[in-house]
Amino acid sequence: MAFAATFAATFAVSSRRITIAGFLLVIGVGACVELAARRGAQLRERPLPTADEVLSSVMRSRTGRVVVIVSWCWLGWHFLAR
Image 1 (cartoon, helix red, strand yellow):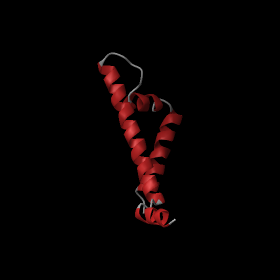
Image 2 (cartoon, rainbow, N blue to C red):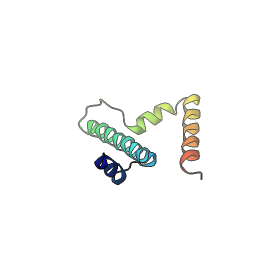
Image 3 (cartoon, one colour):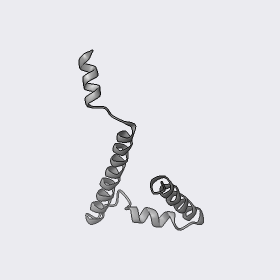
Image 4 (cartoon, one colour):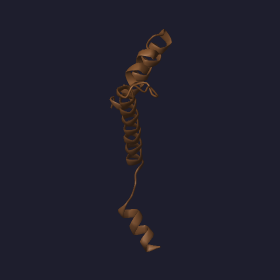
């Protein structure tokens, strides 16, 4: 039992660290998908659209533009406002 307490005290994981790790994971996966899409474009294979193509497609409609601006506002409010 003493080992478990010592281990927990030494390697304590806070919810902040879990959140940061989760965001880093999402950013890393997004970067990998973007690189795979760009590599497919260079090889003349198009299994994945690039982020630019997805955003261009979304921005064609008024609803898409509203969703994008609301998403940017939400991100700014939660990550930039303190």
